[in-house]
Image (cartoon, rainbow, N blue to C red; front, top):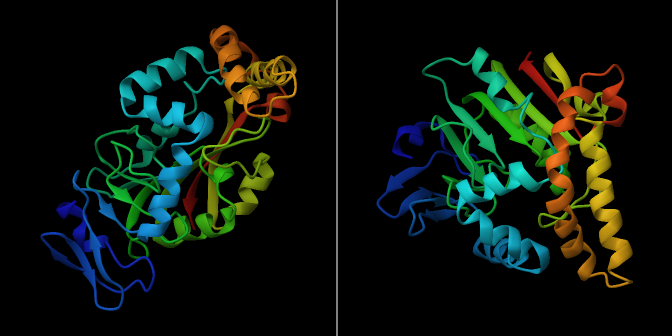
Length: 284
């Protein structure tokens, strides 16, 4: 992370940081330590422990287990998850990148869009470079050229604060790609709060001049997701704990049918019944 040391700041007071062997020091808030894997921890220990505990309970435990091996996790995800996420993804933003620009992925999870990105997540997955809360990002204002945030905002109770932070650190003229669910069942990871239309997503980022927007995952994915969760509820026979586990079992059967969305998502009006939507915009 030494390459990006000059764009880091304290997430709480936004003052400059001094790099030391064990991490970064803020004169006001003290030392932000590096963990054993070299990740910089910009959240308080209590918050980190809470997040780790949340990811290691219930159905989230199973997800976190597979996320320890990102390649295996995403292979299984692309085969069995009923949501097709193979088109209109964040890689479309590469068309607008500067070869020497700063690229940041907010809420990256264990995956990496490309090696050029700084991966930021509130949970210390293996692919994460910086552990931080999206509403208090440890980057100087106007320091990032490209920002992506994929399927993150539904999992936070304060998406406006996240969007404001994204716009704060994005340079004027920089580009942001954001995708969110529209029609999806409740899916905690570890929590689930929000859904958006494209118009709602645009309102969340009023300072973006929209370049492209549309369907990330189409109506067939929406149908399959609801069927999996519907069967999970029906066949759990009233067990609230069993329902999400059974839903994931039904995903194994229904997931491969999502590729029908290659045809359905291109139909006129698909945005009205799509699973996932996106915007790509330039900061005014």
